[in-house]
Amino acid sequence: MQKFVITGGKRLNGEIELQGCKNSALPIMAAAVLVNGKCILESCPNLTDVYSASRILNSIGCKCSIAGNTAEIDSVSVSGNAISEKLMGEMRSSIMFVGAILGRVGQCTFSIPGGCELGPRPIDMHLAAFAKLGAEISENGGEITCRMPKEKRHGGKISLPFPSVGATENIILCSVLAEGETVVNNAAREPEICDMCRFLRSCGAKIKGDGESRIVIEGVERLHGCEYRIMPDRIAGATYLAMTAAAGGAMILKNACICEMEPFLSVLEQSGCYICTADNRIYLRRGGRLRAVRDRIRTMPHPGFPTDAQAVLMAALAAADGTSVFEENIFDCRYRHTDALIKMGADIQVMGKAAVVRGVKKLHGADVEATDLRGGAAMAVAALGAEGRTTIGCISHIGRGYEKFEENITSLGGRISRE
Ligand code: UD1
Image (cartoon, rainbow, N blue to C red; front, side, top):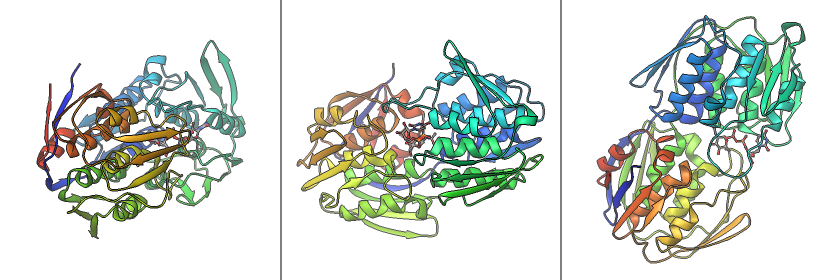
């Protein structure tokens, strides 16, 4: 098993180009199932999860190929109505294909999706929404079948008990080709949902209100192919900025989505980083020491502070002056990276939803293992600011979300190698 070896304590300087967004590439690839034609997706990040999505597409008769950062998906001859247990288990986003297959084919058999272990990640909201849109759901030995024959497919009014990103996306996917109008109340407002809706609109879908908590979908008969550029990845962007915040130095993030990153940028500014934005670039400089963030950092659905950026920010603030307090409100088990940070000298106390981070003078290198995607990235953030050598094991977690991870860190002057 490969490891990253990072030698910290060197300031970072330079510029990097932000990759395409994982969390919109995956639902957009699922959305391509609905299209009676060929879609070309630009800025598609080269990630293991994207390749898993490509395998799901090919397994149901769509033709998906990826060359560089361009994915071509031809769904004219989609034929399958089942996703194997193996493919479902490769990532959480496999669940997005269920809504799309149901919307296009009218039936889908699948099992519980895999993904990062962040605590229980049920799919009850997804299933309840499918049922509201006319699906009959049955279960047999862990295998779930949703049947939605054409005559039973209809729009509906769905009020989500919580603004779930995945459930919002699945409802849209399932209803774009349904007859009539579908309304989603208490919808999630994440920018990646808007990106998926922009893609679907480019294919002829009628969706309004994405980015707000009430989304209205008017079913259309068919969708046509299009060319589409996937938005930049705000969480990968947050990670590289957190690295420079932790190590000190100055960087420019190019191809950044500034508005979408605002909730993260404003907290980084409170920690004493100088941030300046123009066009689609973010400049960050950290001269002196980082300061603790005075207000509690509460993870919330967008436009609140993103749960996916909690770990990388915590890694930077572990060596700030003063005490920062985090409150994780989205996932039950999203502090699994704290043990590794503590091994590197951090002073962190987890109490239920809260984590109290008392900044130390300096972290030191240690041998640690990535616990999940963003937790693993947080260890790299900590390692770049720490004194000495850190090895990070289980790096396949990191490969699920970061394209050119080592190249980007190296181009900022960070010392990282793979062993
Ligand atoms: C997506 C993102 C993930 C991010 C998360 C929250 C992708 C591929 N992943 O995950 O990176 O951390 O949004 O911003 O886009 N829940 C239920 N029942 C359900 C669905 C969700 O109880 O049927 C709960 C979850 O357990 C969690 C909360 O709702 O506690 C939020 O989950 P959700 O917004 O659905 O996250 P994902 O779509 O899985």
